[in-house]
Image (cartoon, rainbow, N blue to C red; front, side, top):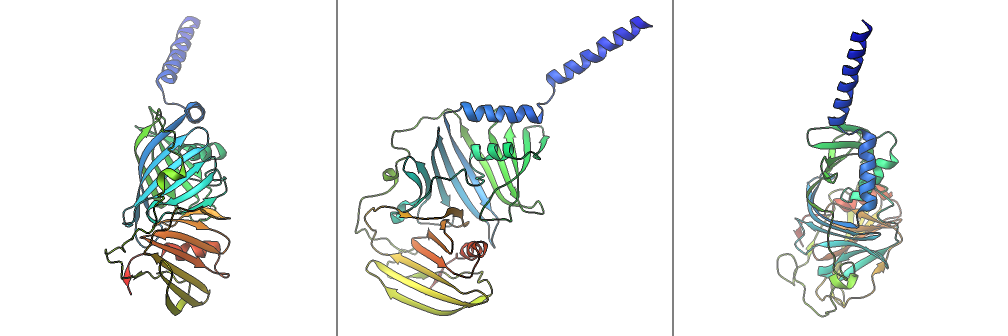
Length: 338
């Protein structure tokens, strides 16, 4: 009897060992591998498509992501509804910049980005969100290791969770779903390429590479006519209404000033320049980078400024909260010729 029992013990332990040897990685194993990859890689280049369903219409970006260890980033975003070129988030030794090459304009921020919040298209941000969340949920599918974690979007409390899908072989991200409180997907990022052994040129992270020194260049409006000014109105007016609108000629183009009054008072200024300015020092912003869906904006305490479709926009209010500023700015899209 003892002999048979001993045989069964050997068989059972052998089966357990065989199953564990060919079984799935545990959550701890995968987290350790992700962290190890992050520490060992010298950089990466990736391509992704980001779809944002945070407004009345879906917005899509094609994104080129470059990272060079330790703290160099270049994220180029092309919005399918903006015919005035891409915007670039750039981080180098001099700071963090949002560049609009077509308008020859740029903002400069403090160096906290991207560490100061979740970034669904950055590998290290996704891994760090997992490492910080002791309650992160983990599951395994046929092709992916999947984590659900809390997020840290300082300017948007409506996106508290995310699901991140990592390829089982490469441990690189395949898809990210950013979720609302009801677990609905409001932002989705699909990676199409991910190169963990890239090469870079010496000036790939230099601001000057993406801006022009030329001045006096004519910039046409969206319909190709430099004489028209395409005025855009917010669809979300925070319970207020447009009470005054004035148009003035400036040295380089035209400016429209809109005043809204009601539950919350605010002002929207939009300006089109017919003459491209010479490349100058970027405008310093004491605030943060926000994605408005149709553009990348610069958010300070009571102002958001952004560039879109060849125009400069400034939304300002002493009464709107930061969240309301963002929601109104997100709704300023579409075209209506004045």
